[in-house]
Image (cartoon, rainbow, N blue to C red; front, side, top):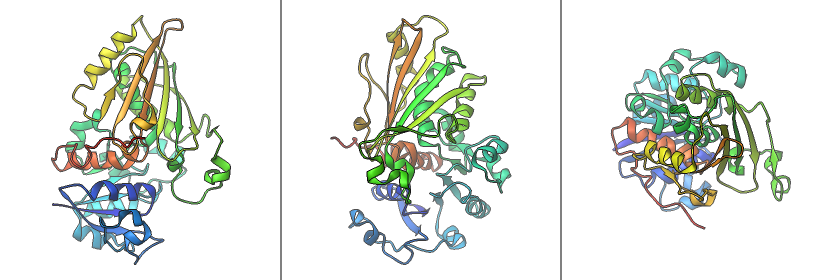
Length: 346
């Protein structure tokens, strides 16, 4: 059994990790930490887990966790994971960081966008961006994973076949993305109060969202050249889900059927990416509670653009499910283990 620990177990991504790992046949959860709820039973804080977790939440002690765990999930805000990752790496443990600290190839880019000095650039240099459908071979050999952001996951998977095959103009990409409120985390924030977000729909961080350089970094690798993207996130009054509508100008004339065939071939071996048939565009309800990314597309021949619709559950494929998929690869398991279930509907 893989002995796993979660640092930051009572945020939304931590709770989602426990939901997934509680049914994982190869994992034993041996350490859950929380600053707010330490010394309380997890199922008393989250009664939904009754019968699945009797663990008592601990104060963070990296030395103790390192002695008990084979892998650590860090579900912490950016800038907070570095010392934990440093301690775990020194102890020879595998780490999957669900924050932003280990997603960037260029530390200066991270520091510019997140306004934090990176304390472990040597570890960042050996970390792997944990998008399995793109970086599977690297993940298999990795000991530190920078788990991708939720918006980037939907956009990168939505564009990968086009950019890998040089089929769109790289300076024309626009991503218009909408996210449920859980993407803002469990902390108190006026923007996420019921009266503020219910019956409301808004764009935010226009032209300056911190996921922008992460998206551009990975899209540029796929394209083999620099990609600049216009990315606008929106907050939708629902709990879970991301839907990204992505636009790009085609370099040649292609039909919808030709591009759908390209996508089906590109993702033919990928269980967690489902390409929908012509005229069918995915909805957030179709992936709710699951690790799937659903994709549909059409060619707008009038404008010469392709329009791609990509949906994920922001807490699963956009965070905790993808982290478990990465863990499975790192430990030589079938990556579907613990994740191969049908989405919740309705």
